[in-house]
Amino acid sequence: MKKHTFKDWYKGNVTLKYAKSVFINENKPKLVSWDEFIKTDVVKIKEKQKEIFRKTVDSKLESFKKRFFERYKNSIFKEELLETEKREFADILNGPIPDVDLIVSKNIDVLFEREDLLEIQSYYKNTIVGGCDEGFDFVQSPKDNYQDVSKTPSQAYAIVCFKYLEWLFENFKVTDNHSKDATEFLWFKVGLLFANGEMDSLIEESKCENIPNFSAISRKLENMNCRPYISESYYSKNNRKNIFLSKSKVSYLEKYCKENNIPIVESFKAYVKKT
Image (cartoon, rainbow, N blue to C red; front, side, top):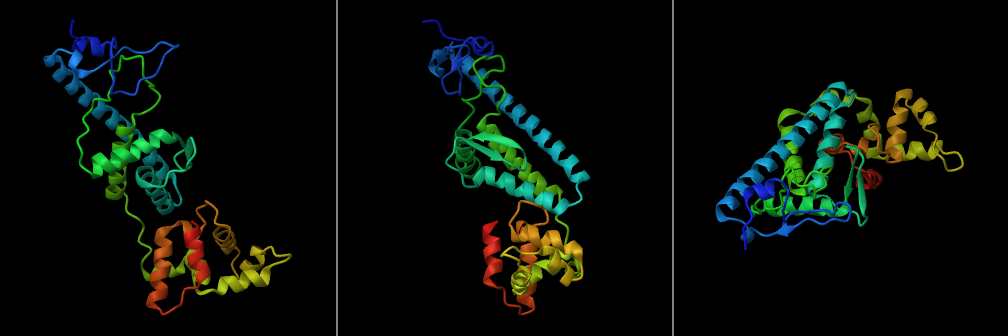
């Protein structure tokens, strides 16, 4: 039987069975294995697959970097943006996966299929962390029509996320709020009231028909700008004014309380767990 060549693969006349192929207009690809190719051409194909894979990773990574840099430059709350971005991509690589078919990544506005997210995490665990060399057999020729060109291969996406996280950690530093000046920020003053339990009392006192009056609490604190920090944190909203969404803020509050012998109430710990 005549063996296939590099040209057959690159032109898309045949598809390696190790790739994730799709049917086009009910037509299925001609699936082949390595032993059906000329041996010397196998080497050429594998080199080309590696090149295609690396270009895919580089292109996607650059688009992530460019997009974040613009958002970071325009953001008023840079620390919150950076922390949210890190958490989002760390969760893609190693976070819990809901048992639903489609999963929305809210902060980066990406819709994942559950199967793809499972593959991303598997590649991260086994190859990036575990060191297993899975090769690039799954990479299709750019001229192969039997592939979903709208999706980045899961393996490439995993590497992009990993490299992107490295880039975020190396190039963007969290604002140092761990100095005594941090105590002057509104978030700290409100957060400390949550931590020492005073906010619990203020909320209970302000309630009318069991609904807290955050404006009344803010008036009592003599600063109406406190209101969003109190309400967003109380309702655990996905908002930059929710103190408990910021790990650095929570960490600073806990450290401050420990250093100043201030007992932290259980309700504060419950808010932290909720987020």
